[in-house]
Structure formats: C-alpha cells, structure tokens
Length: 113
Image 1 (cartoon, rainbow, N blue to C red):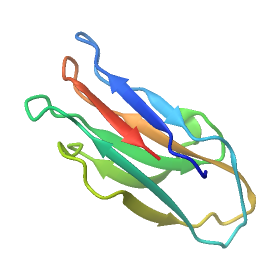
Image 2 (tube, rainbow, N blue to C red; image 1 turned 60 degrees about the vertical axis):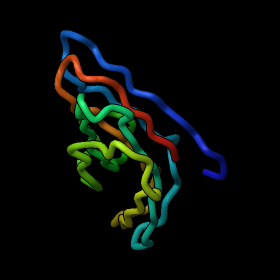
Image 3 (tube, one colour; image 1 turned 90 degrees about the horizontal axis):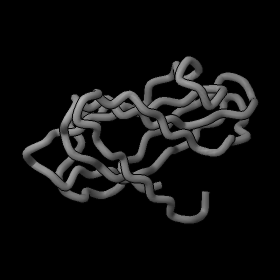
Image 4 (cartoon, rainbow, N blue to C red; image 1 turned 30 degrees about the vertical axis):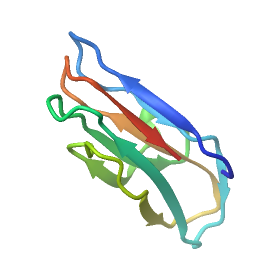
C-alpha cells in the first residue's frame, strides 16, 4: 500500500466485538504468492482483545472465507510486524479483512498496515 495506515478498535460495554475493517481492493494474479504485513497491539493487560485476519473476493464478512491469522489474545506490546503469505487461485480483486472478536466490555486495540 505504500504508506502507514492506522486504525483503532474501541470496545462496547454491552456488545462483543464483531466488526470488520477491509483493505482497499487489491488486483492480484492467480498462482502468485502475496504477503500481508501489519502490526497490532492491545495497550491493556487487564482486558484481553482478540481478532482474526482473512482474505476474500469482496469487502463483506460473507466473502472473508480464507483465514490468515488468529490473534487471541492480541499482543499487549508492540512486536515486529506480523507477516503472512497467501496465494489466490485465480486472478481478480481481493480484500484483506481484520475482524474484531473480543468479548464485551474489554478495552481497545490498534493495528497498522
């Protein structure tokens, strides 16, 4: 993507996390391996956060069918960026999806690409 993008997920005192953040559409070539890199951290050790990372062919939760990583819990310190490879079978436009899945009334977390 060429520049750093930062997002922060805030908690809800009554509802568990079930929110998505999607990358812009990425034009990818089938059979070619790509790498997604990002950092994520939870500033609180008392309120554990959790998220999954997926990729799919549309920026919708139903299209996020290809699992990349599970961060349960999200690290509580900034660690070197996570780096995961994935390979689409066919050429097309694809999206990376970050999915919050924390329990209700936790804290917040931040991730950067």
